[in-house]
Image (cartoon, rainbow, N blue to C red; front, side, top):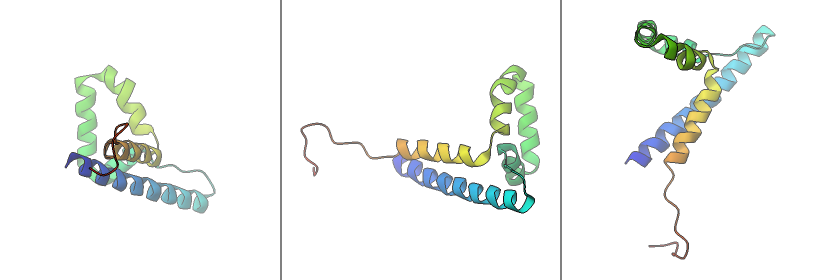
Length: 106
C-alpha cells in the first residue's frame, strides 16, 4: 500500500514538474525574459494565508535552521524540485527486484 502511494504521489509530482516547466517557459516567452516560479510562490498560491503563518512559525522556532534550510528551499525553482521529489518517490515505490538465482515468476 505504501509503494502504491509513493508511486501515485511520484507520478503526480512528475506531472506537476512538467506543467511547471511549460508554465515558466510560456511566461518567459511572453515577457522576453527568463521567469521562474519559486516554491514560495506556489505555496502562497495554494495555501494563501497559511503560508505566511507557517513561515512565521518556522522562523520563531529555530531562526538559524530557517536561514540554513528553509529559505534556500523556498527560493528554489518549483519545477525542478517537483521533478526531483517525484523521481525519488517513484524510486522508493518500485517493486523489489528478484534476487540472484531466483526465477522471475513466484
